[in-house]
Amino acid sequence: MTYVSFPMEKSVDFTAIGRLCIDLNANEINRPMEQTSTFTKYVGGSPANIAIGMSRLGMKTSFIGKIADDQMGRFIVDYLRRNDIDTSNVVTDCTGAVTGLAFTEIKSPTDCSILMYRDHVADLNLMPQEVQKELIAKTKMFLVSGTALAKSPSREAVFQALCYAKEQGAVIVFDLDYRPYTWKSPEETAVYYNLAAEKCDIILGTREEFDMMERFEQNPERSDRVTAAKWFDYSAKIVIIKHGKEGSIAYTQDGKSFRAKSFPAKVIKTFGAGDSYAAGFLYGLMQGWTIEASMEFGSAAACIVISSHSCSDAMPSAAQVHDYIERCNNGEITSS
Ligand SMILES: Nc1ncnc2c1ncn2[C@@H]1O[C@H](COP(=O)(O)OP(=O)(O)O)[C@@H](O)[C@H]1O
Ligand SMILES: O=C(O)C[C@@H](O)[C@H](O)C(=O)COP(=O)(O)O
Image 1 (cartoon, rainbow, N blue to C red):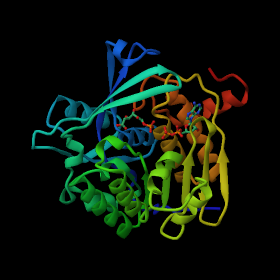
Image 2 (tube, protein in one colour):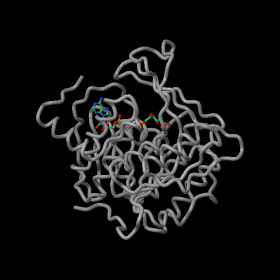
Image 3 (tube, rainbow, N blue to C red):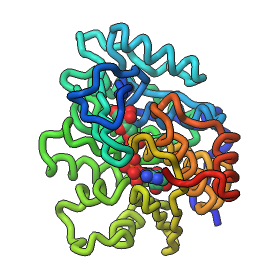
Image 4 (cartoon, rainbow, N blue to C red):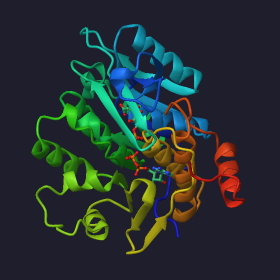
């Protein structure tokens, strides 16, 4: 059963809109950040990670965003280009805004946190008139990251892009990617998330992210099925609710649900799981695979990334993911 059909005549497989940032991942791990003195710099930002993941999987990928006019901004664009990502709609800020930074703390493989520096960041300065309709018109799948809705003018840029994507027939994906730091209040967040989700064909988020969106609703049991059902009255065809190591559940418009278990992994840190899962799952759908096969592929891609130090740099190729699945099935990989 096919739940989404891609406009195959279009030349760009995947376009993401949102933040392009820097991850600074602790080198001395398994300790609090107070005791970490060195960090390795990587390109970061959830939609950037997903775009890099899609490109590594062989998808023709482009990005819509805004970078600071500084060394960090240039580092990001250079990295995207070297990863075959079209940056023709990556705009350079001219207001003196800075690049967002995410310092990651790896206290243990299961106890990780992120310290974000996101004041006056360039990515949230993207303006609606800077979004190229022609690029979205060429795109089969368009992904929005929820954090880009946190402030104007980026918020309006995303809604403008959503209008173009809908009008031009792209399959629209919403990765909730909720980061409380950039938002003024949970109420404001819930309103804008719900407005964006109404327009999307595929919605991906964790149980906690959907809880945030249900601020004004009744779902006392926090039922995944109740959560998903609402969106099928709008545009959604697939809603995925992720539960960390417990795996994920996909609900589809026809009332079915599909469960994916997680694979074993030698986990270094947990962040990056959602981004690699998204890239793997969306890649699978674009290959015409079943929901179950796409979820399995996403789950294995996630394990490769959480077993590595970085998010973006560790995004796997398709061959690496197939190999990981095979080695798990042969019992060659066990959990840490
Ligand atoms: N500790 C883990 N071991 C194995 N797989 C994991 C682990 N944590 C996450 N995953 C995989 O990554 C997917 C997404 O992870 P999750 O933590 O739910 O998302 P996010 O990173 O967005 O919070 C899960 O559905 C699972 O397949
Ligand atoms: O999204 C960010 O700004 C930081 C990311 O680059 C980071 O590495 C991360 O948190 C990944 O998010 P996840 O995949 O949702 O765990």
